[in-house]
Image (tube, rainbow, N blue to C red; front, side, top):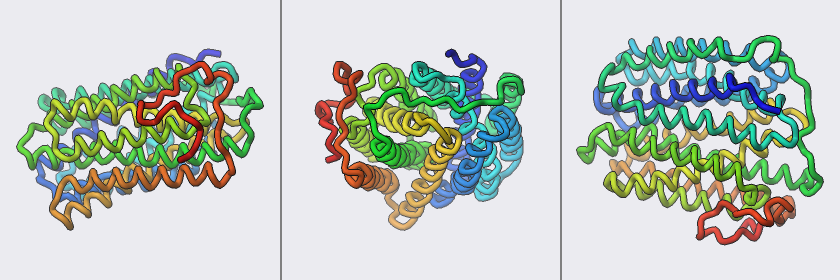
Length: 405
């Protein structure tokens, strides 16, 4: 079963709009308003809280009343946020307006992800999820790369342009004829017990929390580090664009090779590599060193997200509800880690402290993920399909024994 290209177009365009906008906002705050570190950390707070609260309800709501309806409402609300934010001169007020951004996007993504499950057969789920991830990740990548030239041309007028793009995408959201869905069992093998799936679902959520915390730290806090070292704001777009270009490549790799599924070693290895890469960037490395590190970080983000969304949707029921939790985890990381990091920078005066904090969060999340697997009394074994496939892990992760250690 093939997914409508319109779903992929919406995913691509909406993330292009969202991440161009959220490149403009922290750069404007740092370079034009000269915001304090705690203000930069505040930017995603209200957006993240609203995203969490609405995601937890929106996924289950879309199970009942239709994916497309919620998606269209969310895109219109996001466009309104972009227009309003472009006229506000205060960083705290923009942060407050972020609640509209978070609530609106929380209506979009769980519904689209659950629709992928609705329209997939067991044989097609992995491919369809991979293609959708490629579409939104490519949009996110282009949003970061396009930010610098567009912002140099339009300044904060970039934000209404982002809102207009979102409005233009609304007609592409599948119409009422395709909104009704039925539950189709997507678990097609008996190699993995329900306990195994539950343990790896929790592990995937923990690792995705840490991964999105690393990404959010770069998005909101990297401009302050750049300005403190006299580097141009364009480096923000280049580094972030490289991160999410690598994430897009990661979706291709982790979608093609199944060896990482239901094995903890590859996931842990990539997360450790990503934390090391974040420290290279966050300690002020020049662009020539930051770009290769950004590529490693992007691959780690791709592995964590691929695991979280796969385990969330690879179920026979409540796909919308699980997709909502998956997105709520992202929302919690997106505001919680930069906020605490901004407070740490304010307290210590050391701008790299926020990146060190995000790396510590990775270590804690890996410990919690390992605990989830251990408490289930599980040592994951390779599936039949993964026996002849690469694990997708970096050399430091080994070949993947399935041991949570």
